[in-house]
Every structure is written in C-alpha cells, then in structure tokens.
Length: 164
Length: 291
Figure (cartoon, chains in turn red, yellow):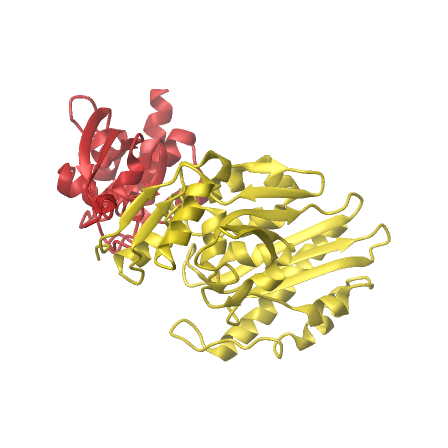
C-alpha cells in the first residue's frame, strides 16, 4: 500500500464541536458521519447522489454528503440533522413542525428534508410554494406525496416569522 | 457501493496537478466538485489509482471579466456562477442552463469544469457553452492549448481533453455592444433536476432593423454529442425571424439528428421533442431580443 492510500488526519467542526480523526481517502463524508462518528441522524439512501437523504449543511449551504470525500471536509464547518435540535436537545422549530403536520411517515428522507428546509428558511422565512418545492426538489420521499412536508415547512416558516 | 482504494493527492498548484496526471499515465483522475466522479467511484465504474483534488487551488476558482470574454475558472461552483451578476446580465443563456442542472445540493458543489470535463451528451452546461461558442483552456505537461466547443465533444462522455490534461477555464465570448440579444433554454426530463432527455439552447442577435445577424441553436440528448443545428441557423441568419420563418427553418432539424433508443425514450420521441423544444427556444429567444 502506498503512503497516499493511508489514513489522513483531518479536523472539522460538526454541530459546533471540533472533531479530529484519521480517515481513509476513499471514505465518503456520509460514511464518516455515520460509521466513524456515530452521527446516525444522517441517512444514506442511494449512495450516488440521487435521493438527497444524506444532505447536510457544509459551511451553511446544503450538499449531499455521499458525494464528498471525508478528507475534503477538512477544515470545514458541518451541520447535520442532530445540530438542528435546541440546546436542551428538544426538537427545533422545523423538527416540531414536521411532527405536528405529519411531514414524515417512514422517516427515511426526513433528515435530508429538514436540512433542505433549514437552508431555505435561514435565507427566506416567508417562502412561496414554488420556492419550497424548489428547495426540496433534490430530496425524494416515497411515502407522503410531499404535501404534508410542504405544509410542515409552511408551519415552521410561520412560527419563525412569529418568533422574529 | 463503496469506492475502491485510491491514492489521494490534495494539489496545491496547477503544476502539481499536471505532474501527477503525467505520472498517473491514464490511471489518475481529477476531482473537483465530485458530483459525477463520486457516484462513479461508489459504483466502481471508475477505479483510478490516484485521485487528484483541485479544490484548494485558488487560481482555479472565480470569474474574470475581460474586454471581449468572461472567463469562468474550472472549479467555480455552479451555484456561484448562477448567483454571479456578470453571468446573469452578460451570459444569460448560461444562467438559464445552470438553473436546470441538478438541485441546490449538487449545484453548491458541482463545478463548470467538472461538467465540461465529463461531457455527458445530455448535460446542460456543455450545451449552453456550445451554443455560446465558448472554448476551454486545457493544460498538460506538454503545455496549454485552447479547444473550441465545436471541436471538443467527440462522443458520449468523450471529449478532446486527454487523460493527462486538466481543464483550467472556460471562456465565453461577450456579444458585441449594440446587438439586441435574446436567449432561451428548454428541456424535457423525467423529473425536475434529472438529466435532460432532450434539451435545446438558442441564442439570437438582431440588428436595429430586426434582422437576425447571428443565430445559434444547440440540441442535447438527441445524438452522441451536443450538436449545433447549422441548417437551422443558416436559414434564420439575414432575415427577420417571424414565427412562420422559424417553423420553416426547423424543417431540416430531424434529419440532422441521430438519437439513440434507450429506457428513457425512443429515437422517434427524441427527434420529435428536439423539434418542439427548438421551436420554443428560438421563438422565446427572438421575443426576448425584440423587447
């Protein structure tokens, strides 16, 4: 095995906490989050960039964590679905809205949906229907038919505006 | 669905990339945004010995505006280009095309250079670049060369870029001052954000009298490479583009395309959709130029 195949030291911030670890170059960021750090909130659906379940925020913008190598996350700031809770670990506004408005059934797509919705509402807390559809366009759900997910995001948006 | 082992080089300079590609002798590959390469690695459709990461090379990222062209560096994210004022105002066809590329999660990582290096016959950025008469700058140990989009696409996922070359930048000419410019991009895909089944890009210049001085129509997904429809362009240039004239000019388009049959669509469907999208794109581009 050549030296370049060996594990590489990386350091990154995840949900406000700094992690330093050694990873093989071929390890995807999604596998690192789940297998190395046990942040199993990030789900892996297709592993080739189609389903959106593994979405995370990289320096504040949503990306698919299965389409990035863990080594490439060195020095970056990541938010996973675990980072969307309140400080006391109770569900955040979006998570609560998904629960109340039945924005999930099997729950597989939910972490990715929450991340995409969070990215949208951080930029715009009064999105129109088309903007919500565009924001979650890269996340597949095979249960809900999307209507309740959209309603959940609208509910969260309404609460965020009230909280402002 | 896990990548095979590979050597990883986090390149700090273009020279280092070129040296590693040369040393790799066809077994080394560049990773930029990874939106195409990562799935290929996961599915082991690609098993390179060495992956060369160009994300940390500052001179490969950003947009430069020169007198007669806008230069977009290879590692510039699609989202960054889409948000850039100079792209929206001066390269509107590119902005319209990028809006169809994947989703926000993929545009935040995906790069212009990556899309052009991959050369999928149905992808949007290569199609817009072809319609806009762009060229790319390629670098290898032997030196730097420029290749026009017209000479760049050789076959499905095959381009004039050789295994030991890295794409540095894509150069888009800026229309001459005074021309009234109209552009349009249309596509049919199975779901929003998917690869196009067929896509059409149109770019029209009109003079002060409404005469067409330049017409570009490019079709993707309906042949082994994205293609300019020169037979249509020739018919439009020099006249006033009226709806009847556009429909007549499109007469030769189906014969100019050799689409494939696959699980997504038949050849006959692709031909028909190409003609419909071409008509929409040309009419929209003309209407925009006439505004």
